[in-house]
Length: 134
Ligand code: ATP
Image 1 (cartoon, rainbow, N blue to C red):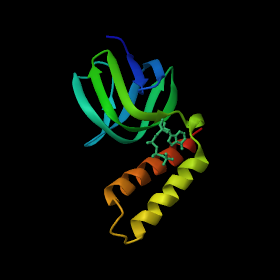
Image 2 (image 1 turned 90 degrees about the vertical axis):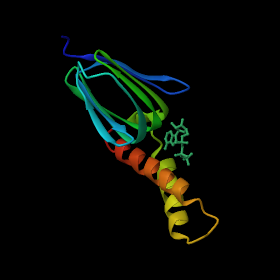
Image 3 (image 1 turned 180 degrees about the vertical axis):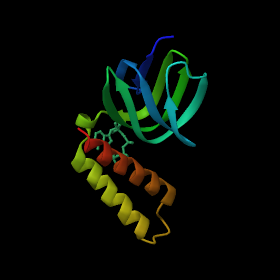
């Protein structure tokens, strides 16, 4: 068996990753999944978080927000709603999104959609964390 699997990460607008990966950690809805070559087939929904994968011995990171993943023994396909490489993340924008979400969450305002603000906060915090890795 090969010691790599094909990893593809796409969003509705572009292809971000097409690489032979040795391992990957992916944020599934019920927690992080560790993928190695030969993994049993599965389909899962993705959460918001950091994707980490190793290819040719180097570790790569991306932020991801929602989507689906198909795992086959020799191929993993991620269809993400949004995903960014560390060097694509606009830190100022993410910091502003974080501040905005935090203001909403502590406002006590009945008009605020709290789950939406929590999701926005999680996306912003993930982007800030991933951007630190660049
Ligand atoms: P914002 O409130 O700043 O728009 P958001 O979390 O609502 O952030 P998303 O809906 O997750 O944004 O993403 C919309 C698009 O903008 C996606 O293509 C995503 O990759 C991109 N994007 C969002 N935030 C950033 C960022 N800080 N840097 C680079 N691209 C970003």
